Image (cartoon, rainbow, N blue to C red; front, top):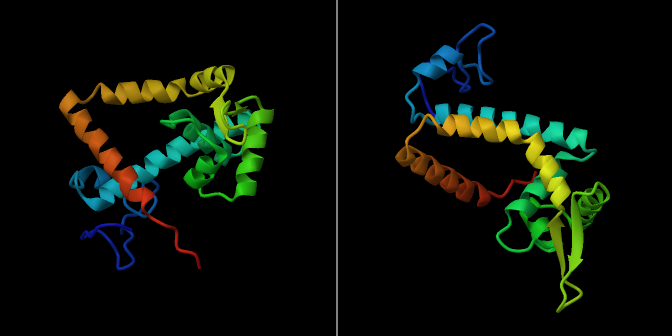
Length: 182
């Protein structure tokens, strides 16, 4: 998919065989030998991390009767630097107004968020994460936090600073990509 290497076919997939192949055809042994800055190595690791996080998100969603998009909405509300509004949530998630309304309705019915009207302008609605729901999410995602803590412990503060800069740069680049409609 990404990068160029001698171990790839013309279609970009690896030549390896066996059950230890990663998606895309490259084996784990070949992945371990890849230069750490190889674009393909980054792609494989980012896809794998995304898959693992998605697995946890889908588990949380299923356990709470939510959609995966609802969990993305919860994360956006939790991470927002200023009070989240339905309009900002729609823009963040790239959904229609109707889809965001349905999402917020599900989250409200499930007890995860509440709509709060702005006191100075009653037309403005802020979405707030309910504290009991936040506690439930913390409990569910505690293993993710512990795994993050364990992984962080393997690096120096300087290395972690570089990792955070990389992740911030990746998020910035990704936020600028508009899906191509066909």
